[in-house]
Image (cartoon, rainbow, N blue to C red):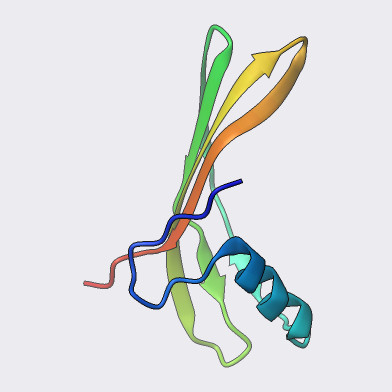
Amino acid sequence: MHTIGSFPLEVTLAKFLQLLEASEPADIQIESHPSGFVRNNVAWVTDLPRFRMPSGETRRGRQTIVMIELHGAWKVVHSHLSRGVVG
C-alpha cells in the first residue's frame, strides 16, 4: 500500500497507524451519504462525509473508492479520503 500526501506535514501510513494506536478512543459521529456506480467489473463510490468531533466542531471530508470485481469478489484498488476545503 502506498500513502501519498500533498500537505507538507502529511504522515506515512505506518506513522498514521502509530498515532492511531497511541490515541485515546473518541466519540466522533459520522454522517455519510455515499453514491455508488457500477460499470461491468468496475465500481466507484463518492461521498462528502461530515465528522462531528467530541468538542462539537464539524469537519467535512471528501472520499472516493474504486473497486474491481475479481473472481466473484469486489476488491478495493484505490481509496482517497481528505479533509474538505473550507470556504
